[in-house]
Amino acid sequence: MARRPRIAVVGSANIDLTTFTDQFPKPGETIFGQKFNLGFGGKGANQAAAARLCGADVFMVARVGSDLFGPATIENFKNLGIDTTHVKQIEGLSSGVAPIFVEPNGQNRILVVKGANDALKPDDVDAATEVLKASDCIILQFEIPLETVYYTVAFARKHGVRCILNPAPGQAVEMSALAGLDYFIPNESEAETITGMAVRNVEDAKKCAETMVAGGIRRVIITLGANGSLLAGRGLSEHVQPFAVKSVDSSGAGDAFIGSFAVFLAEGVPELEAVRRANLYAGLSTTGVGTQKSFYDRARFDAEWAVRG
Ligand code: RIB
Picture 1 (cartoon, rainbow, N blue to C red):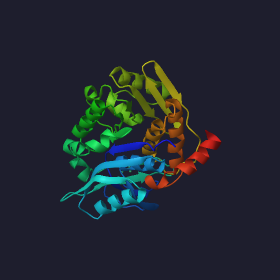
Picture 2: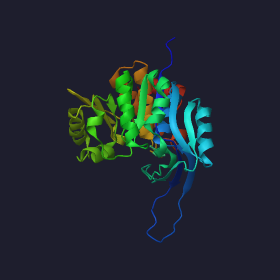
Picture 3: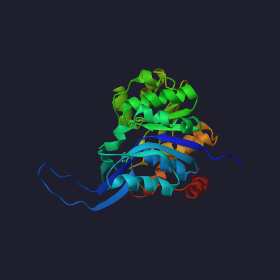
Picture 4: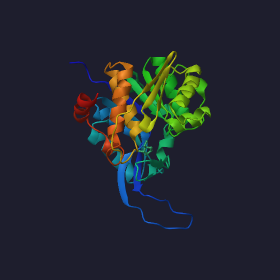
């Protein structure tokens, strides 16, 4: 039997405080929300959880705070079977937290306080050299210092390890630091923030992706929510259709896409099919509440794929 994919995530871990509401308070006003959910989140941790649930051996490089949430986050990684050798608690800092608001149609708004995630530095990447070099893929996001992101992209390039960067939350990027990157996976709003080009439909997404590819990125995938995703590279621009699902909470869907996509690619699934599978995996994650809590395990996913793939 082929060995399991090895995925390393250099990224964030947060605690998600999700409130379900159909309206937002005005300044000075107090109103009632409908429902609340406390869960483990953070784009990095979610992507690690998705990769693990899809069957990979997963290694997390992260920093958590010296509060109640820090040890609980490490425990959660361990319960999922994720290697925490390079997850450390930082004295005097809070853990990352994310108040999330979900509307009745499943649409989310997220506010992130980075806390200890901001303490993950290039030295910490060096300390994990052996693990990272032995990985099939390194996954990164933007909830850690950009300096660390650029450093890790260069590390992956130097050691010939596939690298996926999810530029979330969207912020200004030094594109020259990303030249030669294997996969750049923003959603519509992140792509818009990065390029300054509006992304309102698939045609816009194609133009926007073209610009990023021209900047030297090998593949760009723009995730388009209920419109599926757009896969682009030199001479390649393919709109990949979504799967119909009854969405209740879209938080973490992008993370589900990225974690599962990394595993499918590492298993040798052809790229376009890996995107289709990741579309389904992400879509299914929106049918449950929360981020990691809503992710399917491999057996459940494979059963769905067998019927709908
Ligand atoms: O992508 C969803 C995630 O964004 C949440 O888990 C939250 O913690 C923020 O990082």
